[in-house]
Image (cartoon, rainbow, N blue to C red; front, top):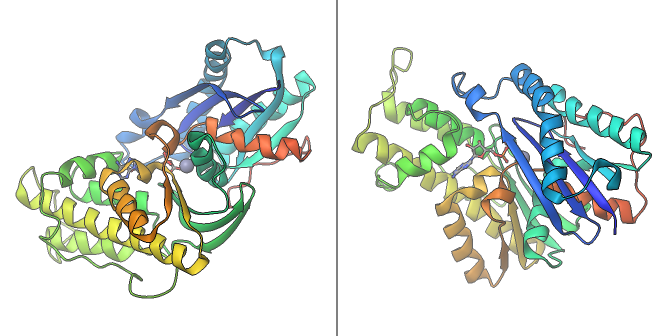
Length: 337
Ligand code: KG4
Ligand code: ZN
């Protein structure tokens, strides 16, 4: 049996996991930086990189300890090297390269977005490919045709904001704090999703693309009127809850609607969903109902595997089996490759 160490530092979670070549996850440790970024209302790249530097080695030690192994038991080091914040990725990539060189074991570079889809494979405990993959997070909103774990063909992405980014920005408009997704979901539970009819961009077209900036601006104007410059966030009350509920309903309609179109256009009967926004209860419910209607199987991992983590770097096992090792000069690549 070969033990792998997975490393994730692409954004604001410092994570390490130990897994084996039969895809059993032995440990998964995530150190969140949410508190560090909250007062800025979003992730500050420089702060994220510095926090990764402080946190990564203790997080790796903890992952090894929880798995009950020592560092010399490792047979491979895997790292998410793309896409993400370049300074943040560099911390993980540099640590992974150093470890692989010191231990004399292979290094495997993994695409973080493909990892989000692969988290569904991990949670399912069986093959899920071919499938349509929806990755919906703070940095990404995209649909893929996934013929195998390693072959992702982009069907459509977002033209502007990612869905999670829209949740975070709407949370800021409504004075709900950061990170916005869970806060908007809690507030929306108190409101009427039909109070405002917000735009569902591209939903009536065949294009498998997303755009959330118009929706975000519609919420801003519905909240403050045109005079947004002097506006202060609304306090608790029905107005705020209705805005949150109506925004969430529009975002969920678009995401579920585009997944339905992707299933129909590809003829595939499996949908795998990953990324932080897939923690959203109403989105899960809408996707469950849609897939039942379409006769498709839905894979959404438990929350710990939806948000950023290093267990999803177990996609590396697929590359390792093919002998697809990374060169010792593997670089961090901020754009999706
Ligand atoms: O995948 P993730 O942990 O990190 C990125 O790669 O971006 O996703 C974080 C995003 C944030 O924008 C956050 O607001 C959103 O996922 N999110 C949610 C929920 N939980 C997290 N969005 C909607 N509803 C939620 N319950
Ligand atoms: Zn992510």
